[in-house]
Amino acid sequence: MNAPATSLVLRAEQAERRLSVLLSHPTGNQNVRNALRALAEREMLAEFWTTLAWNPESRWNGLLPSGLRSQLEKRAYPEAPKERVKCVPSREIVRLAARGSFLHDHLCSGERPFSVIGMYRHFDAQVARRVRTTKLDAVYAYEGGALMTFREARKAGVATFYELPSSHWYWENKLLAEEADRNPQFAGLIPKLKDSPRHMEWKDEELRLADFVIVPSHHVRDTLVGVVPEDRIRVVSYGAPPVRQRNAGASDTKRPLKVLFVGALMQRKGIGYLLDAVDTLGSEVELTLVGGRVAANARVDAACERWRWLESVSHAEVLNLMLEADVLVLPSLAEGCALVVLEAAACGLPVIVTPNTGALEFVRDGCEGYVVPICSSDAIAERLHSLHEDREMLATMSHNAQATAAGRSWESYREKLAETVRAELWH
Image 1 (tube, helix red, strand yellow):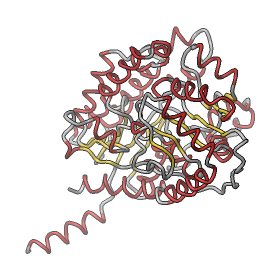
Image 2: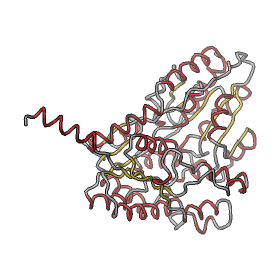
Image 3: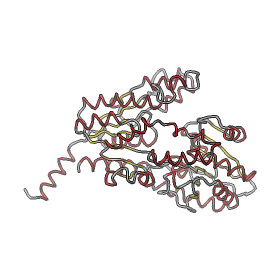
Image 4: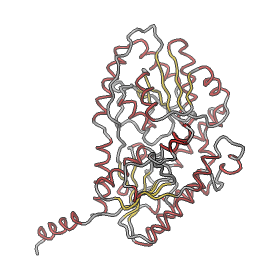
């Protein structure tokens, strides 16, 4: 048989054979859910492993307090067939139950068994046991929860895909350590600096064991230069939700500019620089903060008292807040690809971001919003003042943001991710 004929036969055999990929993540955010859906829709999903998978149709659902019910409903996974969803719930249940109680520091801090790190490791070990006894083509796991899974996969000759949704940890820690020295009043709001050498080494080995590293932005890829060979890295950008109808914004410059921040109130996300910028603008702006406090801090605590602060709201409520706001500000020092920026764009909300948000693939300076340097409250204030004074520009940016979001759908993400996995396994 000649070479072209052989190639055709091989492609036909590949098309008939279903790939078998085990996907694992302890909590399942929007990018994980779309990765899950990408594999399930194309019949490539062997199993999805997580900590909690709630059934909103359960008879218990209506009997639960509304707050608890809301938390559990975030852990429903309609993206995959129920029989393929597997759970490791014990440590996550304890971790969630201990929130806000006196037990939290005793059980859930640092690397204790019920901490986030402890939960991830226990979860990883259970997934690894499954890999040992299941026939698979690949495992797809995430930062901090992949080491033991990858060790077993390597023993079995199973391909390993590692998604790194954030900047490389050493690059990030160097930047954040410099920030702590520069701004000691906010140093207590950088929890990543408390990560132990053991935890960093754990992730180092995960990265070494990965056959392919999936990253959501060129920014993350750039932080891996010299760490991971370029031919092992694949950039698959995250997607935006469907574009939503937005009411025409008020053109009256006498009305304060409605500024929105969504994210944990920590210095990695540039919260101190935003507060400094807002303080200089006085009555030109009004601020809404959405996100939990990570530690006591006089400046942040005062801002939460002064401005509208919502500690925790549903994803649907966040999108509604975006429809009400005039601009989203996310002056992060280190991100991978901030989903909140894509969500804002879908809501027609212009953004002010830094290059380190991983959003430059879909935010052009002066088009969908503004790109400002990291660590510059002056630049943030200048751009907010410009938008306050020029509501026509604000409206143009809103239109541009929605147009960009329409071309960056989660559907296109799912298609590219599935094709990336398929292409590497059939290579």
